[in-house]
Length: 394
Image (cartoon, rainbow, N blue to C red; front, side):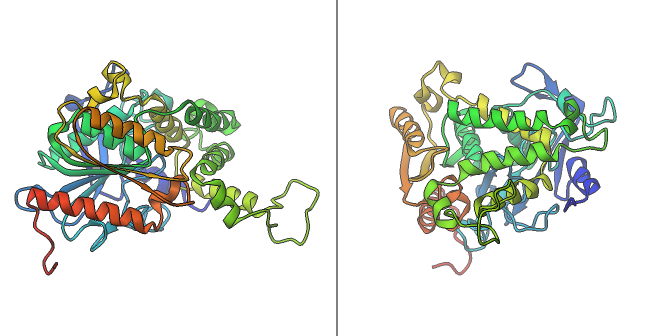
C-alpha cells in the first residue's frame, strides 16, 4: 500500500507547501536545449534573517533526489530535512548568522517546474513534453529567484553531489555574485561510470508497463516498480563496500537459514527494497529521468573549450573543496581535478579530503571533520566580508 497520498504529491508539484516565485510567459527562461519555458515557477525555503545590506545570504543546492526542504520537515513524508546535520541555529551553516535559501531544482517535483507540473497549454502534466534541462538551466533559474528576492551577491553557495555541480556552475557563470563556494563530493563532469548507472535506472523506469510513455499521471498510474529498482541501483553507489559490510555483511533477514528462493534472504536485500519503495512515495519518476540526464550532460570544461581552468579565469570567489576517501561515485581525484583547475586560474582555494568509510553519502551524515571544515571556512569568509556574528557569540 502506498505510504503517501497521490493527490498530496500532485499538489506539491503545482502548489507547494513552501514559498514559490512565479514567472510569467513574458519572463520565460531560456534553456540550453535551445527553447524557452514560460510561465514557470521555482519553489524554495529560507531559514534565518537577511541582514540590512543583504550580504549574508547562502544558497544551498540540493542533490539528485533532494528538494527545498533542507532543514525543515518534508510536507510529503513528515521526515526531517535532508541537511539538518549541517544547517540550523549554531550549526556549521549557522542560521543565526546567515540567511539560507534552498530551491527545488528545475525539472524537480516539489514545486519548481518539472514534468509533474501542469502544462498551462494542455491542462495535463508536462510529462516528456517538458524540454530537457541542464545543470546550467537549474542555476539560471536559481539566479532568477535570487534576483526576485532582491539579493545582488550571495555570500556563499554550498552543495554536495549534484548540488556541488550547481555550486561549480554558479561560481563559473556568476563569479561576481558568489563570494564563497563550497562544492562537496562532486566533480566538474559526470564520468562514464556514473552515466552508466543512471542509464540503468532510466531504463528500469521506462521498462515498467505503468510508465505509459511518461503519461502515467494522466492515466492515474505510477511506474512504482521501475522507479524502485532505479533507486536501489543508485543507492548502492552512495555507500562504500566497507560501510555495506559493516552494516549488513552477509547477515540473514529475520530467518535462521537461507530459503532457497527469491525472497529477501539477506539484510542488504531487504534494506535495498525498503529504500526503493520508500523513494517511490516521495519522488516523481519522470523527474528522475530529467534530473539524472542533467547530471549526465554536465561537463564544465567542455563549456570552456575543454580547459577547466578557463571556467574560473579571473575568479575572486573563495573556494573550499571537500571530498571523502571512500566515495567511489565522485572519488577524490575528481575534486583534485577541480582544485588543480582553480590553482591554474590563480583562484583562492582550500581542499580537504575527509577520512571516512561511509562513501558518497557521507556529506549527508554526521561527519565531524566535514562540520569543522565547513564551519571554519564559512566563519573565516564571513569575518572577511564583515558579516556580524550572531548575538552573544564569543
